[in-house]
Length: 347
Ligand code: SAM
Ligand code: FES
Image (cartoon, rainbow, N blue to C red):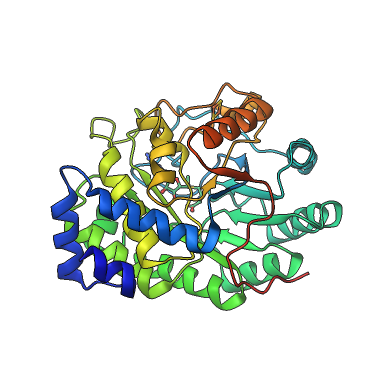
């Protein structure tokens, strides 16, 4: 099955389920080696850096797993102003970053006009940088405005591709069909698109994971964010177990083999459940890291899950720390824009 996946970049649902089952109690080294060698065909040993700016933790949604969900009255809410965000970009640029990822809850304060002005200002100042947005589900016309203003990429994890599982993680006013539709809209508009899911979220089954992999294969996103679910103490899932390291690493390896050119982050959540989690993700085929550029004063308030790492570290500390760790793991830190291979870049 590993050979088939390596050669054809596809497996059917039963094969995916069997592959997951076979590797559940320890990942076959040949699978990790296959994933790693495919990554090297397209990206060598490069690991791309993205500077993450968490610009608001207000959210109109109430996803049951998330620490910044609307009904968490213990969350200390904040919004960064345009000047604050530009300051983050300035210090990020100084530190060498050429991609800024602007992430927030679904905060209606940031109207289309505010976002267009912000994107335009960042692009005018830093024309050599890519802007990635991650601010949830919006209308086709909003996405189009952001793209026309100069945003290059959009991250919107599908969370789970199985209807009834989606309903157990979200309230009734959210739907998997709208999430998927948003992803297809983003692709049609021309964004480099990132989907993805949490590993080990409550009620998740192996079949659900196989559905996630099949959906990714069908969508063919440019980026895939995979991280373990980690409980947050102020949510109804406070007492659930976190997702497992091995299962997360296994999912990264399989996605690398299904989508050879994908940009795959070794996520902060993976580094949170295991001190070497990000290195293990890189060895399984991940090729992106996203150090935090948010102001230190608000860092701990962007609390999606408990015990998030790096909430007390200055942007510069994280940047150099991660760079050293990447080198020590045998990879090559890369501070270029790091676009999807073969992508025609606007501007
Ligand atoms: N609001 C935007 C959206 O929904 O796409 C972006 C922000 S949202 C907080 C970013 C991601 O955090 C989600 O896609 C979800 O997968 C992840 N996340 C939320 N709660 C989490 C938890 N408890 N453990 C791990 N990841 C979590
Ligand atoms: Fe942030 Fe090490 S990654 S301090």
